[in-house]
Length: 410
Ligand code: HEC
Ligand code: HEC
Image (cartoon, rainbow, N blue to C red):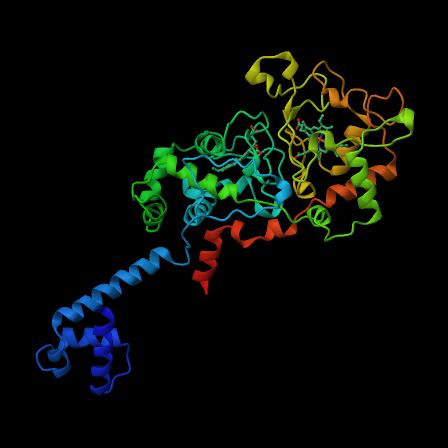
C-alpha cells in the first residue's frame, strides 16, 4: 500500500511543474498553500498525503530515538581459557540496547547530587578504570576510605569491593550512587532527573519496554555495561594463544611469578600465581598479604568479626597493573617496584598473615621472598606484559557523552 502510493506520487511528480526541493516538502507545500487549484493534488486523495506524512513523522521519530542503537541479545566474546563460570543474573540478561544505556549511565553526571560526578570520574578508561588517586573525593569533597578499583573482567566475579561485601554488580552499583561521600543521590531522585531529559525516557523504553524509569533499571543497565568490560588482549594473552614471543626478561619473570621458592632444592621463585594466578590473573580469593602487623583497616574482619580475617582483602587482578597505580586498598605504594620490594623484603608477620606467605622465601628460614635485583626487574617485565592497550582504547567503553558533544561542535 505504502509502496504503491509512493511510486504513484513519484510518477505524478515527474509530470508536475519543475521543483527542486525534497518531494515530501513539495507535497506539503502543495497541501498547505494551493489545495484547490493544483491538479496533482486533486488527483491524490488528501488521505494519502496525510498517510505519507504520518509515516515520515513516525520513521524520523523512530530514527531519532534509535540513532545507531543496535538491539537484540549481546554476544559476549572471551577466550575459552577464561572459563564459562560467568555471572549473569536471570533477571538481568545482557542486551545490546541495555549495554548502550548502561554506558550512557556509567558516564552520566546527572546521577550525582551536584551533577559533576559519574562512575567514570573514579573509574577512567585510560587508567584501566581506576583514577590514579590514593583516595577519591565524592560530591561532598570527602575522600573514599579506600583506593578506587580497576573494573575489568567483572563478568566472572561474585564478590565486589576490597572486602567483598557486595554480592553482585547490581548490589555494588547502588552503593556509590547513593553513598553521601560518593555520588550522594537517592535512586528515586536519579530516576526523576533522567525522566526530565529529552533522550532517556525513550532509551529506557527501548531497553525495558516501559518509559517509567526506576532505580532498579538504572543499576541493572550499568551492570550490563560493566559485564562487557572484558580485557583479553594483553601480551600475556597473546603469548597464551601462541601469538607473541616474550622477551627473555618477560619469560624469566613469568617463571618466577609461577614458581614457589624452594631454597633447599635451589629453586628460586616469587609464587605470585598462588594468589594472582590463572589466565585472568584473578581467582576471587581474600588474603592478608603482610602489609601491616596491626592493620588500620581491618578488611573483612569488619564484616565477620573474626580475628583470623584481620587485614584480609580481596586479591585484586593484576591485569593492566602497570596502569592502576597507586597500589593496595589504601594506595600506599606508588610504583610496582615498591610493591615487589614489599613482597621481597617487608612482609609483616601477624596471626592472620596468609599461610601462602608464611616462610615463603628464597633464603632458608627467610620471612620475605628475598629476590635479587635482576629478578625484581624480570618480575616487573612480566607485570608489564599484562597491559592490554586495546582494552583502554576500545571505543565501546568510552564516554558516549563526549562523543556527542564533539559531534555537536562540528
Ligand atoms: C568517588 C569515587 C567513586 C565513584 C564515583 C564510583 N566509584 Fe566504584 N569504587 C570506588 C572505590 C574507592 C572502590 C573501592 C571501595 C571499597 O572497597 O570499599 C570502588 C569499587 C568499585 C567496584 C568493585 C570492583 C571489584 O573488583 O570488586 C565496582 C564494580 C565499582 N566500584 C563500580 C562503580 C560504579 C558502577 C559506579 C557508578 C555507579 C562507581 N563505581 C562510582 C570509587 C568510586
Ligand atoms: C597470599 C596471597 C598473595 C600472594 C602470594 C601475592 N599477593 Fe599480591 N596481593 C594480595 C592481596 C590480598 C592484595 C591486596 C592487599 C591489600 O590491598 O590490602 C594484593 C595486591 C597486590 C598488588 C596491588 C594491586 C592493586 O590493584 O592495587 C600487586 C601489584 C600485587 N599484589 C602483586 C603481587 C606480586 C608481584 C606477587 C608475587 C611476588 C604477589 N602479589 C603475591 C595477595 C597476594
